[in-house]
Image 1 (cartoon, rainbow, N blue to C red):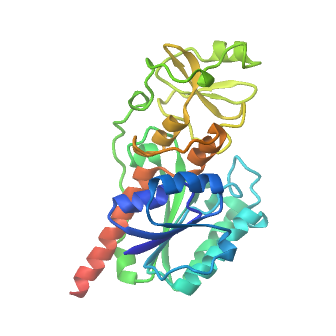
Image 2: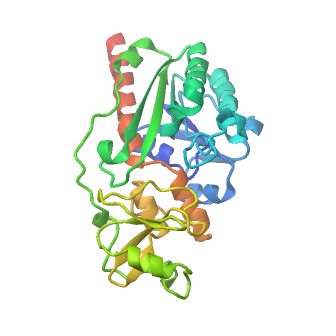
Image 3: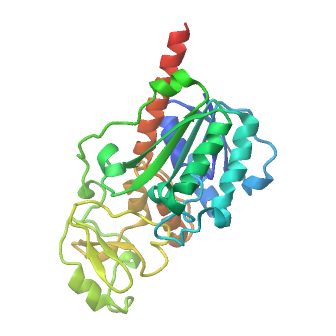
Length: 317
């Protein structure tokens, strides 16, 4: 099945579906820095443009999209459809209506379901229903369903035009978490000096030093306090973790207290070690990692979509 991806970011959703055996032929992303990372790692066509200005979208079998979540996020202003980032859903809906793919896959923050007393969620569902899609959704945590040591809850929405394929589909089951923080972070390895905290580059270093005291876990530096994550998981990575003292993930290593590197952040999102990062400012890379998806989670859902479609086609034979 040929797939088009929208709000593609660095291509996490596309990578998950590719790993599950789907064929990505087209993607769209407006952020030029994210596009740099995208083309470093994907060979199919990427159009860097505002989604409202697209006019060359090919016919496809499936549309996947992680439409902007900040408008609905608890960490944001929760403006939803009153925010221009939330309104782009309706632009996406027009594309879905025009192309009529057999499957639609959407990803967003957990808070989407409760935003505006559930009205935002109901609008998305009714919009897809009115176009003929049978729709289901689930909130899944990557640490419970994708063997990824990050506490990251997201809502996944799947729509099928075919009722039998819809009936055959189910979201993944829980699996035991075997992967540890130490599988991603090497606490005994020296990294670039710019990632380490000291009294020379951090005005709140005494607070940081007194708060970050245990190894083999991850802390959050949240401007005025340090929070230890005692569940042996990476906290939810955010888009603003590279912009100063907000939600910065910290670790205590052999060589001192430091923030996670951009590469480590991508690996906590389940990107492979060979995923390439362009030579751009770390702040852009942190934003890209925080805005992305957990690739193994996407892959598992994509595999179940594939099974649902295969079962449906098999019944027709």
